[in-house]
Structure formats: structure tokens, C-alpha cells
Amino acid sequence: MLDEILQKHRIKSNDLAGIDKLFGGADGYYWYHTLRHMCPKNDVMVWANEDAMRAAVQNQENESAAEDEVKPQVLGDAHVAAIARLLSVGG
Image (cartoon, rainbow, N blue to C red; front, side, top):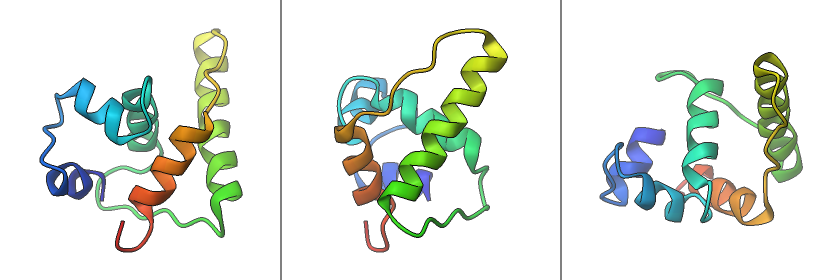
């Protein structure tokens, strides 16, 4: 679905600024990439609500940061809103 979202908005996968903007502003590309790691192509993820989605994405970030021994990024409200809007059915 991530590829379809980029195509729908006429954004190429190497357009970091375009992906930033689409996924909630600064660091949007970071969260897009996190989603890519969470759900490889042709897999499907479903969350009960926005809070569950936020928790899952933040947990993925926390685990990744711990593996890399760095401080995790914090998923912002603008990113959550953009991800929820883009990933919703018909998003």
C-alpha cells in the first residue's frame, strides 16, 4: 500500500522532501521508512484504532533504536495524523 500511496500522490520513492511532506512534515520520510520495515511488500497490517497504530509504530522505533544503541525518535501528532489518513481505507 505504501507504493500505491506514493503513486497516488505522484511522489517517487527517492523524493525525500515529498515523502516528508506527505507523511506529516519533518522526519516524515523516517516514519515512512519505519512502516516499510514493519510491513514488507504484499503483507497487511491492521490496527483497531489510531492509538494502537501509534503504539505499534513507536514500539518498532523503540526496538530499532535499542538495537542500534541510540535514542528513539518520538512519533509526533502530525505524523500520526498523516499516517492514519494515508493508511485508512480510501486514504
